[in-house]
Amino acid sequence: MKKKLKDTELGLIPEDWMIKKLGDLAFITKLAGFEYSLYFNNYKDEGEIIVIRGTNISRNKLDLSDIKTIPKSVSSKLPRSKLFKNDLIFAYVGTIGPIWIINENDKYHLGPNTSKITCNNQTSFRFVYHCFCSINIKTEIVNNTSIGAQPSLSMSKIRSFRLITPPTLAEQEAIADVLSDTDALITSLETTIQKKKLLKQGAMQELLTGKRRLPGFGGKGGMKDTEVGRIPEDWEVKKLGDMIEFQGGSQPDKSNFIYDEKPGFIRLLQIRDYKGDSFTTYIPSKLARRFCDKNDIMIGRYGPPIFQILRGLTGAYNVALIKAIPKNNVSKSYIYYFLKTSKLFDYVETLSRRTSGQTGIDLNDLKNYAFSLPPILAEQEAIAQLLSEMDEGIEALEKKLEKTKGIKQGLMQVLLTGKIRLV
Image (cartoon, rainbow, N blue to C red):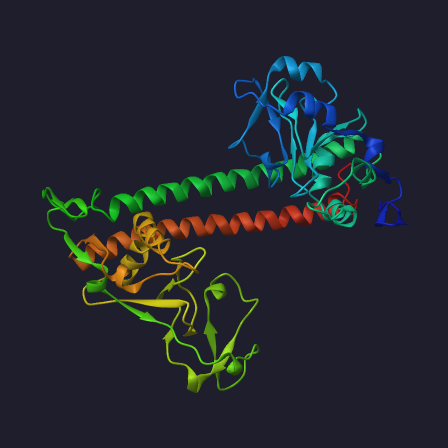
């Protein structure tokens, strides 16, 4: 039987659900001024307890790349700000919003710019965590943030946050179970994607330098020393300018720009267009001078970030882009992957730092870059095909990840508002 709903300031919710202030569900505190001045002014590198500052929480994950510590004895003296397993820690100054669940005792202590949320025994800490990820609490954060030298929230404002709350701990836990399982799947996908990207980077390093040869290529040939390092005996050292034509972009005066598609006009591609279609620009076709299609290799000439390797769009391209056109006996797909190597990027980035103003690519420097190349087109294509297959696998996982994130958002909208009941 369908349960009745009631109208509230946060919309329709089940009749037996309630809107409660966070302060009625949890104890909320921050590091006191005297605690900081007496014990935290001089952090000890040899301390056993990690101090969680606002900078240590990012995207609801713990970032321990830069930590400060205090002795365990100091943490024990300050039980009010000591962090215990299942406490929530919430960043309330600067980048407001990240939240994390403390997962063990005697390891962490509350630091500057973070608050501690300890739920009472009738409130699921996991349920509250998921509420903080919802649009409802994000709206509360926006509406209550004070804008000064740094955005911030007072403890009283945090305590006033309104949560739509099921009547029983069991129902809160049931909701948290579903959302936590979805989070676990998202984390698993993110981890797998990162591992596959690292594997691809390793494959590029080995395949594009000849350290690893694919079946059918190389035979029993050895290695030789060259100006670019040791390479297979049957490979050659070339300069980019000998193998690729770099064609700069062009554009008419901005007075000719329009921002809606129209007959007689062509899309003018800029670096930003490879990230999204929010700012499409069109120019008269008769004024277009440089063209590319979706299979062409395009290079972002200016940064940051400098030297982006792009493809996938068709149109005219502006002066911030360069088209890389492979010459005879060079695979376009191979060149696409070679241009994405970290060694070449480091070379370009180092040279760009020597220029004043906006970082940019000097085409003469780029043309003079020496690299090793398999002379047989078939080997180039085989290497590119393997890397392309790895890319396809990563892209499939990324699509699955985005779909799963969308499912999570949908689940939050129906579970945290009681539109779908689990118990």
